[in-house]
Image 1 (cartoon, rainbow over the protein chains, first blue to last red):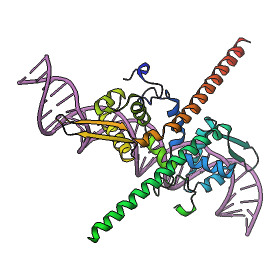
Image 2 (image 1 turned 120 degrees about the vertical axis):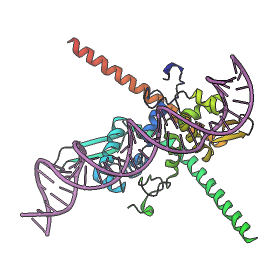
Image 3 (image 1 turned 180 degrees about the horizontal axis):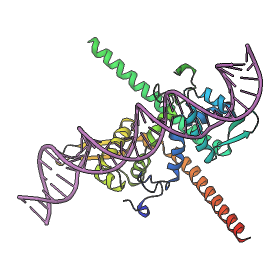
Image 4 (image 1 turned 90 degrees about the horizontal axis):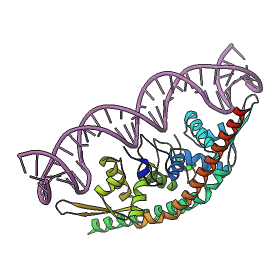
Length: 137
Length: 137
DNA sequence: TAAAGTAGGTACTTAAAAGTAACCAGTGCA
DNA sequence: TGCACTGGTTACTTTTAAGTACCTACTTTA
């Protein structure tokens, strides 16, 4: 068993026990599942969306998982849920202020990710060129 | 099935199919599993470490999962593996330059995470105070 | 002689997450 | 009349990830 006192503040301790010690990990756990960043991306770029619209735009997601994700994001106050008890009911989801707070971080992450991707693509194409040259000998 | 052409560049497409479309998601997938950020944290703050040391410092992790994570981080070139074929063999892991590139992003994420954590703690304590006042009436 | 440490690998089990399909109420539309 | 739309919920199945335990080969130490 891991003694929590011995763990640094940014630790992600054992899966069984005392999880929510590291705030960084807590935020990463919000973003990590499949679909989550995609949902946030749609709300960021397309603006507020109703449940059905969201489900159609995030093509392939099931209603169950979309509901789970939205509930989780709502609980973390990253998105806001507006329920109108009309018939049929009208539920609109929008990015809350906390969602917008993530933007600079996500943009920085995007810069890194794109740079690495192009570096890797370059490395792969160079490898391919090398093996073509080798085959030509 | 989702047509990849219809997906925005930051999409995290269906779990079955074409995953590695979104570079942001690709990086998040590196960081997300349990232990991963912890391993990087140890290498960032403590410097290069051997396998056994790492296993002891990341208390509670199994050799299997530590190996998996290190292999994944090595393949993504976040971590460098130095193998010395001595007897017994000596394997040292260190943070590669790509690992250091993540630092600004992780620091920004840490700022957000800590702010949210303290905000939430404050909200919880205010709620507790309110229910105490209510009980006192 | 036997245990402990080196850096893992392999097989099996378990638990969590995701996917699939059916269903709800109430109304509009053909 | 019967299907589709609204925003989900529930039960069931499948997939995936993680955990546990045991194994290697060689050396040092007690």
